Length: 232
Length: 268
Image 1 (cartoon, chains in turn purple, blue):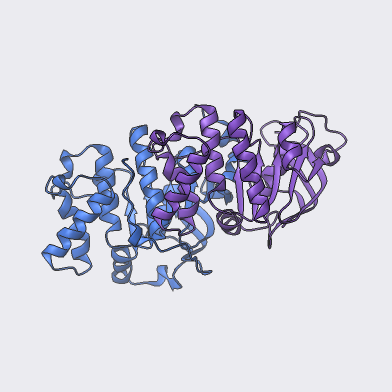
Image 2 (image 1 turned 180 degrees about the vertical axis):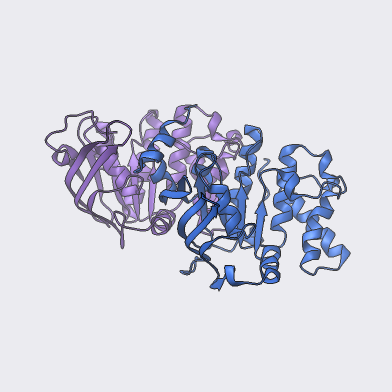
């Protein structure tokens, strides 16, 4: 479902003497449907950079990133928009939403974008919020006022609202208590069981060993002249 | 629970045809020796929101007014739904401006008739495209005031009695009542309080999604485009220096000017 080949990335800082910093070379990775692959490597080795490139948020310098039939490395913006709407989900560490939109609608939005009827989309959103232990009295409020852990759970609910065939998870269990961590791990297991291909970053070793089928150390893709900490 | 009233009946799904709604090639406008905009090209597809950012004087407003036909471009081509806009007669172009297109001004006073009631402002657009039945017009105007969250009992009030945010929402209702396919917006959230901006952004997002609108929005506010625009064009000195997926341009800018623009935003 996801196939990365010979991927490279560099950053050019035009306002800092036009320094070009290579941060990744020769990255390769394959994820089959129903499989979860965890990225490892120390901070700054390029885990998040790789994930952002799969999402289309960072441009690739070379190589290919096939997600289904789309090569994210060369796709037009509108192809990536369609990919994100239908095929590829992303649970980032930060919730970025229009202020004042109720939590229930924030979670339902990916389904509404696919044309799901409003009541059905809100029902699905309500089920996920309840499962993730967000009290019902908060659903009509904007998540921008919530605690970090609550925002993280809203983000997870939103990422799991649609049954994406491919999912990117950036630290989905960080800042969660044991009960909610367990809910998230079950959601990941269920997504795998329905055939989703998952790429994740998990600092939580217990979570990693429970859901990941394989680990890929991104240190192997770090250019030799770069030490940890150089990636943006 | 007080959730936003979105009308499920108007949901069109998201089937996006593979033909661009608007195709712009080599659009150029000069003011004597000065460049307004130079050699601008892009495609806009149905349901897409394109943001145009750049500082004052970058040519973004010139570009918008050339696209909307408020100014005549010197060179280049604009094809709307396969029709050559620059070759159209003035009558044809005006007709397009009343039916398929809409233009939301930064200052609602430029887009509203301040001496006419709120209902009249919305109804007038319907009459301009041939509606004649008073009950239908008033009913549709009331429906649109509801969609932009203006209370029904304000239908006979003049916009001069409204707050800035309400005026802007009324301008949007007036523009969208005739079901345009392409909406031009010039700094639509400029001059509004932050909390009012948020409500307007949510309204616009819902309308884009539910009505399948294509939008070209000019703004200097990067936070607004991040939340609203699918794609982004960065302009400097009349030229497009960078374009791409909005979050990619903002998070991994390639051009020196975009890097400067993004790094100059104050963090809140």
